[in-house]
Amino acid sequence: MSVAERKLREKELVRKKIIDAALQLVKSEGWEALSIRKIADAIEYSAPVIYDHFANKEAILFEISQDGFKLLLSNIHKAISKKASPKEELKAFVETYWKFALKNRSYFKLMFGVGMPCCGEGKMKTEFGALQDIIYEIIKKIIIEKKTNIESACYKTHAFWSAIHGFTSIMIARSADVPQTMNVSVLDQMVVNIIENL
Image 1 (cartoon, rainbow, N blue to C red):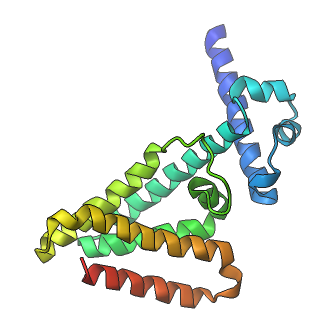
Image 2: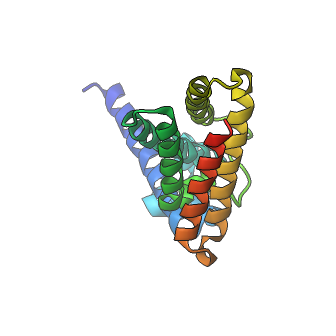
């Protein structure tokens, strides 16, 4: 291994340490408490080392949110690939989305800005668009099967995701006072109603 390759590898290792430490701090203390100083203390480096890799805290949060989107997209692709019909794909999408949000609250809040200002200087995440594309393709297949208006696929995609994401965000923000069985029932009925109206 050349000196240049070794330096690059070491730089990537430090970058990974920064991201891992930041994510752990977000999980344990919340995104509001995250600071460059805390990350530096956690990985036992000085703050300037952090700034060698990231411009600021928001750049670190943006990278973490992209990792969250990649994980969610991977889970969704696995879930829908096992389904035989578009309706089952849509149900699998919703179930995977919901479970991801419950299991990965810190990621979910960061990815979608739930209860926090959005990170990443307003940049649109390509992964966000990829989620929308998955929903659109599934909804379009259902519309074709039902022989309804294909022109409405874009509108119905937006309406579907707005309903599912809105409900999930509300439950993430206040899930302690609502039984999970009720949440799941509401979500299931919402999906049934949406499919009926496609």
